[in-house]
Length: 270
Ligand code: NAD
Image (cartoon, rainbow, N blue to C red; front, side, top):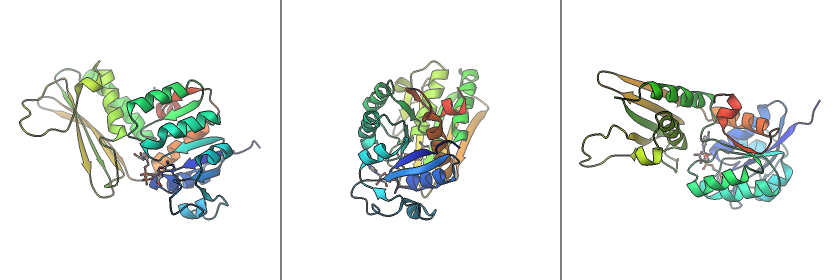
């Protein structure tokens, strides 16, 4: 039998981090190699498995991302956008493939990731669920057909703790749809409306964001013409769907050459 792939989890004390530990434990051929959170996180030192509710794994929650990269065959990062650049640099320095789930990453950091991916296998996806990645494909097809005469709007709802808006998934949905109809999202996106806005510009793609309660993540792509409206909606009901997808991405990218991949590459949805 081949050696199990050792997965390290960055942000292991967080909502996604705990799910990821559980998903690694349930993944055949994988094992939790290391887990780490912010040095001042009160959970540091606790057993990562106990923290995630899956029983003791003998892996204490560490404070040093450097040690985590050294101990892992592949690392999964669901933390904060401000840390993404440093984590990618550590991945490169230790030649450890990296799966990034963190959203809200700015353009300069995205370009840095593209640069790093020339020498390192890297997966960067705003959403690791199968359904959302299928939705990207379907929405692009619908947009190509309903290009003229249909207004395009993207709606998203997330829990009260989410810190970035619109969600990374809503933005990617916008990019995918804009590409499909030959528009540049940065030129046509409208992020919220207020006051006397005038009539709708038909080339725009509008975004609406709701933050409420414990919603795990809901996205709708809406295409509205005169006399009809087509809506494609995805609703996540458990974070486990993102965690199993990210672990699947980690198993996949651990065997791949350098390159920037996203979940559509792993699922073969391109
Ligand atoms: P969370 O706040 O519950 O967890 C984040 C964790 O990261 C916390 O424990 C925090 O202490 C830790 N952290 C912060 N800075 C760190 C650092 N420098 N080093 C190590 N750990 C650090 O948030 P969450 O709900 O788990 O979401 C985390 C990120 O994942 C967000 O950006 C969210 O939008 C994103 N997310 C992505 C997907 C996806 O499929 N791509 C799905 C869900 C959430």
